[in-house]
Length: 238
Ligand SMILES: C[S@@+](CC[C@H](N)C(=O)[O-])C[C@H]1O[C@@H](n2cnc3c(N)ncnc32)[C@H](O)[C@@H]1O
Image (tube, rainbow, N blue to C red; front, side, top):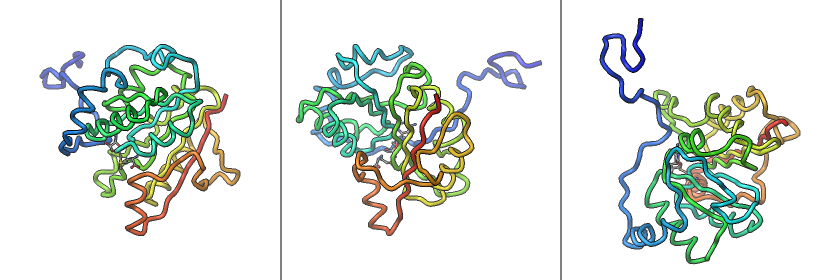
């Protein structure tokens, strides 16, 4: 018999190991990013805890909510929020310098439709996002984890996709892009087999980059290395 909270040898397990899709990079914050963090987090940041986020209160209005997971340095998320003032955006990233940089840029442009979280997006979705509440989830150029032994870290897995499905509103969209062909194939296959989603591409394949998705920093780097780009767009069935 196993006792909850202990392993077979009876040793206590405080934190069951879960595989993360990221390793927190040690990248230094620039003085500007540090300053942005200190001065702007209170206004544009959302704390990670176990409280459901009340989006109407957070943005002070009711509007479609779009979540971007892993926005990196945030330039493309900033553009989307600027180009689509009719939407509310929540960006989730674990890389602190990226969060600092985006905070400064949001404030410079006085955007009030973009808020940020610095935490594991999987935990945020599980604990803080209400079911059936999101108009779209964006996952642009997630860490590809090239090596076979690291591929278990790829964020796109069956349970992650079902978590996204739970949080999307009926007909809500899940948009992914990658510059790594092996990952693109895995993403497409996983989505095609996932219950509760249909492909927005008429041929059940990839789509060309839609206008609403700006070219990202990571994508530009891939292009310099001669990589292709694959966009995948599915929507939740009602
Ligand atoms: C390859 S980068 C791409 C960044 C950006 N989307 C772009 O295209 O330039 C992937 C980003 O996802 C972030 N990330 C990975 N797993 C995450 C998670 N579970 N929650 C939040 N951010 C995550 C990493 O910190 C990293 O900045």
